[in-house]
Picture 1 (spheres, one colour):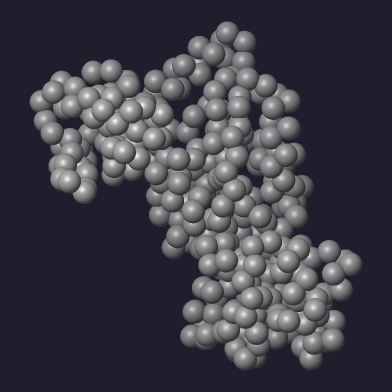
Picture 2 (picture 1 turned 30 degrees about the horizontal axis):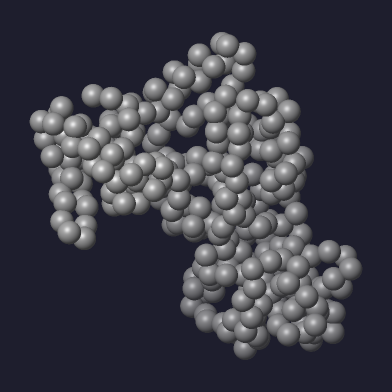
Length: 297
């Protein structure tokens, strides 16, 4: 049994496809298929049910998968121990980043430069997407660690490390009828045109969940994928938004009105796959990010 065979098995299981696994491993499909067949021959069982269009784990494959993951993690950790003994941590961390309020940890360049100052032998590759996409990539082992903003029900299969949490407020332009209010309830907003982020982004998930809990629906008039664009639409009176005031800049001339007891919160966390050993480089990056977040708590 060889590590390359075990790695091929795990990636095929994650991707449910020999073709996608080959692309991820930068190998030809025949090499991946041969590695899995040789592993099955060594174990004396079939690990996958193969049809023309689908690849599924057999019962033996489902039983073997967690052990295979542990074997790969142990081999990687052993390699890191030797690399540290030889003069420093080495390897790669695949980091997922999101567009967030202006928290220090949300600035990839600052985090990576701080981390590389003490760990120059570690390469950090960055992937930008929404929180839902990052959560799925973590579960499928396409990322090692990621910034996410997710409601509790969307964190299955992940270990979460909370960095910051902020109550969301109504954001509206200075001349809006609600701008001078001390507080506003969600029920008063159902007829307002909303500006919001895409459906898989953390701010949108938190706001949608709050309206759902209250049994309310709202109208999304504009959906936009960056904070500056959201602020511009609100500033020009094209809609209201629910978000953290840290989305905004003083020059945006936007008013923040507190919401009532049903106000959603935006919780920024670092997530890693649950139930698995986190690599030494990923653990080191996690420590750096948490250290950087401490002043914002």
